[in-house]
Image 1: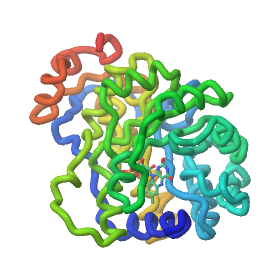
Image 2: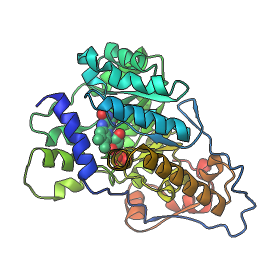
Image 3: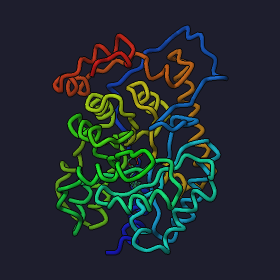
Image 4: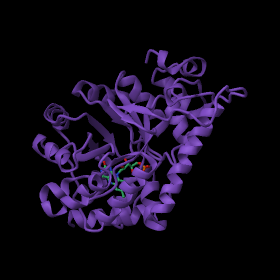
Amino acid sequence: MSRQSRKREHLWHAVRTDLTSADFDDVQLVHNCMPETAFDGLDLSTRLAGLALRAPLLINAITGGVEEAENINRDLALAARECGLALAVGSQAAALEEPLYQNTFRVVRDVYPEGVIFANIGAYASPEQAKQAVEMVQADALQVHLNVPQELMMPNGDSDFRGYRRQLERIVKSVDVPVIVKEIGFGVAWEQAAVFRECGVAAIDVGGKGGTNFMLIERRRAHLQGPDDLLEWGIPTAVSILETRAGAPGVDVIASGGINTGLLAAKALALGACCVGIAGLAAKILLAEGKEKLVSRLKGIIKEIQMVMVMTGSASVGELRRKPVVITGKTQEWLRQRGFDTSLLARQHADTLKF
Ligand SMILES: Cc1cc2nc3c(=O)[nH]c(=O)nc-3n(C[C@H](O)[C@H](O)[C@H](O)COP(=O)(O)O)c2cc1C
């Protein structure tokens, strides 16, 4: 099957598969009944990989490299522009192989010249391809995605993942923009976060379990049968944010994987993420209901984040990121067994934590 058919089918399945959200039920913010904060004038700005973002939300990598992607990426860029958000294009592999497809990516820079835009390639890409991907959209940063479970589930997918670390190091050295390493829905653990830090990445997008599930999508695409337990594979998004912070102190964290509401986004920020990424929800709304509906949902998510900021007494995203968070249940148990003292998060500012 060609890369183009695969891209088409990913969109088709993303729209038709029920949306699932990350499980943050074990993560609670503490209500502030007298916040001394005003809704108007809240500071939503944040910094990611040295870049200034107007809001702590980005439309994550979705598509490109197939004819219809030009219109989709145009609409995503217009929506991002209207809401003042950063935007990542989908994997540019197709356009690196076949220049005809470059327009399906370039369109985002054409319609959003002032935007913060991320290029996207796989970890198998060469440094030369990485540079071309950045140049193609005049990117402000480069996302390098990792999708091992998806490849393994895909008939004829990749099965040899050796050499990625070296490749990542070479990419980081060769491009002149910050590199963001990115999972696509199975999460990042402490140990690999530490490796990414050693490789010199500027940010890690945890792409945790709970949202779009590419093992499920690949299984449906290939009409495969099988037990469902493997589809539960991965590190939940909430856990992965803390694992990543612990493994890569000082490296910015993007929370993604099933962040479909403002409350989930606010909880992810309070766990220490610099911003959150949304992909499946954006694809679904855009393709099923159109750009205006997408803009209205994105503005709704921002408004929900603002409400939580007031209700926690946070005048800025920076303050929200330092608010106490109570972690219970399975999430606490996981973290405890991995050596975190979650009571520190509940009692004091997350910034002062030693993990
Ligand atoms: C239709 C579709 C296509 C995607 N294509 C890419 C891609 O080309 N490159 C990439 O890094 N991630 C890709 N992703 C993964 C997302 O960027 C994101 O990491 C993942 O979907 C988890 O976030 P979500 O739960 O908000 O969807 C794609 C997601 C969807 C829904």
